[in-house]
Length: 560
Image (cartoon, rainbow, N blue to C red; front, side):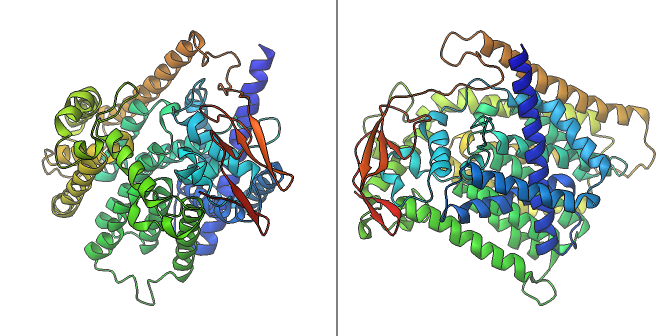
């Protein structure tokens, strides 16, 4: 029991330490890029910190591994920045985010991670921890090819004593920051009964009722949750003509989502759309943000370089961005095409852990796949999710149909711009990668919410707040917290009773498999570890087969 309590206390303490460090980087970035001309809350400052840390991790990986020394320095610098700027944070906000961590801590305790954890999440983060950039690492196995900035953030959490057990911290803090933003919007807008209040209430319910399993977050869900904040800021801009810096802040959030998964690039159209609606010229001397523009260029250079040096593609597995036949360390174009087909096949229900269609190329063409996708995936997962959304929106409609004020102008903008835009997003998602995990949760959610909004009749703003109205808001928040924790408590109890390797035996630490491996040397230096099956925590670089390599200017190059 004492060991369990020590582990829980240690994890909670490290969460708070990393939280302060993220906030330190966020306030530093805010001061340098926006010169304090952007008023944002503590949650959004935390997201700025995440963006800066992504860039730092990209850059430092070219020079040194993200080892214990590197990570301690990164953590300490963030803490110093936090305490230097401590007076800029409101104590009530610090208390609120502490409360949110206490209310959601059950979410962090898992015995089994995402299914891709042993395949490439942990091996890739461990590779970043143990090695500086390795050119051609995509040749080792499929896992080293899938780029996501969340894995770079994961590698920064490896510390002495706690090792890799804070692996899920970035996903967790993103959830905490988003919840904080939504709570602050509720507190700020409940008097006005505005559209922003409605969106904040309904989305805090959706994400905390539906997405309660941290093991399902992987590298995808955090980006979809961030889109909630992006759209919330968008609606604030078009309805209240907020500071132009809020548009640029949204651009930073979009860069984060893009670095998590490249398919979020479609949402970048929101930025020019916002400028168009508000009739703002972003290139005028008054509006142009030189510092942010330079920083965005640096980000794209680092992002594309990281992708290119591991696979030979600027964005893997988009073949148009690949140069595989030109470099000895890059993937062949035929291999990229094969993997692109496989990923699309998986998303279109042509492959599962139990079977695979015979002719993959023919199956994914046109609408050949739709019948099987409907049978295997739509009626099992998509429909369930849609029914949950319809239920939540129905409840909100009957609770707030006479309370929430949604003006005619906002409705017109939604119908003219946003709903068509979301339809295009869903069409692309449906015909290219129709899996909820691959970007489907958010556009379906927001589209159903906006359709429900159109059912609301025009209402006058009532300044007087009756007790029933406030009770409804408090009731929704209370029920959401209860459901969130009940689902996680039930899950934790189940994980104590599992009969497989993932049974909780060292609560609250998750299971990591130790594997035997064979080391290969090059110029008397260990350069590759061979193991069977998934690499798990095998020292990196790790592969299932022998791969030839060269050492050029102290950098390791794998070759095909």
